[in-house]
Image (cartoon, rainbow, N blue to C red; front, top):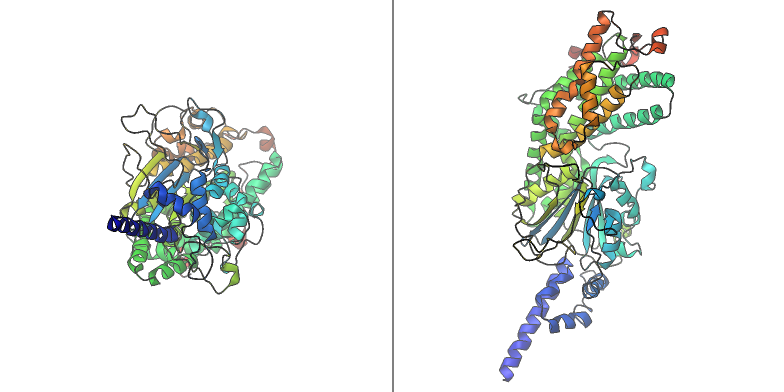
Length: 600
């Protein structure tokens, strides 16, 4: 009998030791689910309370997580405003549980579209996170698609809201948790139980890009945003001169970036095509290089660093090659356009539209830059005892990210899902975000339904909530495998929406444009349709561009035939303000001929 008691005591000690070691590594108190009630009670009062980390700090954070596990006060939400997709993937090998929230970059939420919605059960993502973190039984690493700080700085130079960013949900989240992003030793509970990470290393505090392609895009969008702000508050007569000044700025911008524009002319079979796209993105971004280099030097992670780099490089080049014909055509049109001596209103329209399209297509392959940084950081080992006191936490923390939340544009999220699939992560859940869904206009694109699976399913009742409620977590019944394939139609939705917005402003509401041509009717139908954009074949819609370019050709042809299509009588009577009146291109910024630019 005494031998049996001794064996039970030994087994209890081994279980307690194993759980304690695992808790000390992954910081997820739901590991206690594996114990019987007597051992759980032991942990509640005694386990791990005197353990110290290697740098001598008491595990106060771990103790709080264990207390939260028993208190069970994490929020449950039925409808989450902001994202439109949520997946969960798990790896026993890498000891990571990852929830990925993908959004469409909007400030709106549309949970009201859900049928049979229960009132009072909706939270926007930032408010949900605010309630979840202090009550979590897991230490969270939270990755947000937010612009980078200057390297070496420990906080942003000014408040997030002062960076002239649009009020999309990403920046609402960033503003809500700004102290956690800037002060690792904040007294706030949500900061003590988490680490926040920015991931968008294409821009440094929204002012410049750390690599040539990123800088090209940022500089262009800065000019575009300033132009839109100015023109939004001007009268019709003022807008014309603002538009002309904007075009002059664009001509200057293209001339100053002549070398990059020349490289956009390279076809995908050019021997320098791959080199241009990788050398001016991944290989030129110091943030990416630093994280990959650190990961490569960690014992046992050299091959992982190589897999990340090779995977991202392949994805980037696939994007560049997919759109190379469009990029080359747009670059050719732009370079031809800015060399025009006497400019017309139509010339200006073409230039504005073509540069905007070029930036959109260049943005797609360049989006892989922050993805490389994010993946490297997810697998890195953190220095828990840094020399710089500003980087040292007063409280304990795990050495790696194990309990992870990613909140970003779904284009990035699909890349992460695909990479984790390649590493044999197990799919646990997939909610919303199916770009192939066809149906009615009640499908939300800025909200996910997180209600438990109804009992009518031929499976046990299952819920994804609370998040991080099991290690390992229970998988969603009847789960469609998360294969990580990119959904190009979904990735094109925002481009289609921007195309529609442009037509709305340029065609539908512009008093200078005739309303009796077929192309106008096409644009009007697209704008006023009640069919959600994500149910349209968006790739073909963008390719056709709603006949907008054909319409401009039509305007040009009518002008040459002396048949006036631009019918604003006031503009017709004033040569200076007429849309047709030619004006000289700014001589100082006129682009060099292609042969001359080849010498740059």
